[in-house]
Length: 263
Image (tube, rainbow, N blue to C red; front, side, top):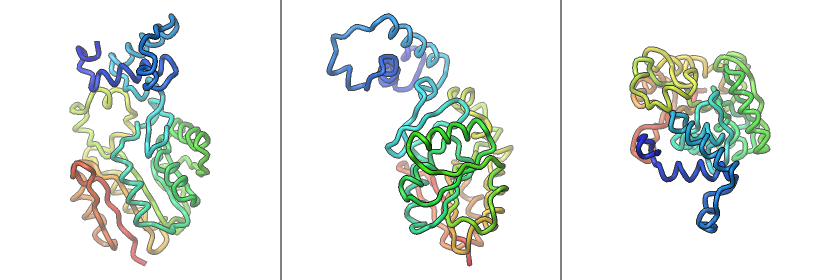
């Protein structure tokens, strides 16, 4: 059924959904190949398959996604954390060792903020304009024992001046003109507030780079995930900064940009 519906990785998807229906790990199937499903498990499995066949991403069906080797709770109110975003964590840990206070802008599920706190133990703040996203992020912080201070605001407008030594963000960067070209699972199910920046896709980068010098202490770092067409624009924005560096992902695509504020 999943193959016929052109669902990607159909066998893996079938196993993940079945494991969720049975409340077991996928390895359980190989240890117990003879086991038959109970009626309730069949009912759950049928419902999960129906949702996936209609386009609902697997992560929203099962309610979680792994990020940096930790399980994060996700709902349709937040963007599903991507493996590529783990590069933001890696770059942040490299360039801002010893930072005393960290801010994650547009935290969504809280994946970046929670991960950075757990990896460094430093005082961590996170913002989002969505109350729904902040509830999800707070739940993840509590579940993973991360102490993160959450603030509802637009970008970093409520963050005090010269209060941070590291600012990270995976901002919305998809241009509205590319909406129809997105995968159905992304376009129709993930929150548009977390996907689309505006007509050009650069709008949030412009605002973050403009306000970051106010929030960062002298010598503080700004680390952001890059969209597919945003490198040249963001590099130009960061031309007045020091130590600008671009880090590619495993496919060689420019994925993260980092820059240090002069001071």
